[in-house]
Amino acid sequence: MRILVTNDDGIQSPGIAALAKALAAIGEVWIVAPDRERTAVAHAVTLHKPLRLHQLSSRTYAVNGTPVDCVNLALLKVMPKPPAIVVSGINKGVNLGDDVLYSGTVSAAMEGTILGIPSVAVSQEGQEAFRFEIGALYAARVTRLVLAHGLPEETLLNVNIPDRPRGGMRGVRVTCLSRRRFDNPIIEKLDPHGRKYYWIAGQRVSWSRSKDADHEAIEEGFVSITPIRLDSTHHGVLDHFRAWEPIMNRGIKKSQSLERRSRRTGQREA
Ligand code: MN
Image (spheres, rainbow, N blue to C red):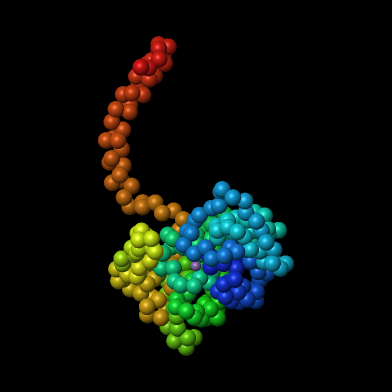
């Protein structure tokens, strides 16, 4: 049973080491990960420079690319056969709510899903120190369940671990994505020449306070597991926007019939 492990914190991160160690008890672990930190690159793909694979040991490779590059290279070039699962992480810091739109950790799992492999992203709450041994324990549990039962089509799991000692964990909760945004996200300062520069930073705030939200679960000491699907179509509003079709189509039918007529008569449209 082959397992692909990747991340966005880079191959040197203790988070990926803890994950690979825990998953080695379940299957044959292959690591293909960025050669440096690529946090918040989301679903970026490298198109304008060559990618290099740097083999560090028999089944461990560093790539000068993004997490999504790594998953593609691993599945299509590096591994002799596709893995049974892709596990991305363990990320330094949670990926809750809107974070999943920016996260390289989640995007790696998303890419695995796109390529038809059951995939899981694992992220951990913490500041300086991270209790990766606890995150790895839950990552291994989720991995075993996914290997045993599979995942629904087009669905990945986003797992987040609260920063608590093993005895302080309150359990596991299946959650929805919360809405989390940044307060004062852009910091303006002056450089030594007196010119303005900007730094994207700021404090995260949450304003969905529902019991089933991922953010609440972490705050209350639960491991959060959110099923995410690739299709982000808002099916509930399709009819609302279909009512716009005739307005946007105004004049189109007329010009199409004019075009047909001019084609029939062999004349060029003005
Ligand atoms: Mn990261």
